[in-house]
Amino acid sequence: MWQCSFNSKNLSNLQGNEVFMTEEAILQGCLKNHAAAQRELYQRYSPKMLAVCFRFAHNREDAEDMLQDGFIKVFLQMHTFQSKGAFEGWIRRIMVHTCINHLKKNKRFNESVDIIQASSAQVREESIPSIVQAKQIVDCIRLLPIGYRTVLNLYAIEGYSHKEISGMLDIEESTSRSQYTRARQMLEDILVRRNLLPEPREKTERLTAIQ
Image 1 (spheres, rainbow, N blue to C red):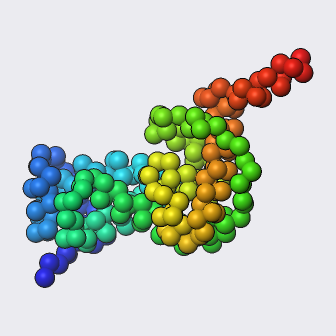
Image 2 (image 1 turned 60 degrees about the vertical axis):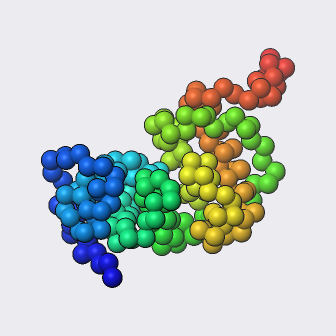
Image 3 (image 1 turned 90 degrees about the vertical axis):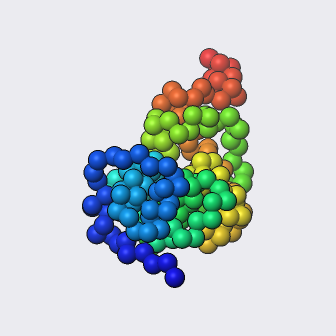
């Protein structure tokens, strides 16, 4: 039976000279607990995964904690990867679930994901630019309340369905939908205030009529 000797103390040792390895070599090396393969995997994917964690976290310190826990799970679960999808996507899913588990330990988060129904909110479909990964947009997303931000990240960026989100966050599917709608509305307002998105046509028309 495969066993992994990796633990949180090893993460501090995963810095060093870069050695190019193929993805298959990394996989096989990690399965054999080779430090070089573990180092290469961490160095190759940690920057992207830290960005994922930072979108969910309250601050960078929390994001780094999520990243560490996520990579521990990656190494411990390496033997379960079946090469049926992208390796990076598999790592990313582990990171997302790790972030959610961290957030669910926070009472304020548990209270925030089930408080506001926004079924009557009107949001433009084009309100979230296709460059949602851009730093300016990510910074705006981080201004949203934690519950809204989490649902928006899961649905609009990570691609989870509302049914999947409801299971991940232990909420009703309708709550996920309303949280997302409200999150988009709030994000649109922020983007407009920062001149990253033009004002809605109907608002502009009302202002013109008043003048």
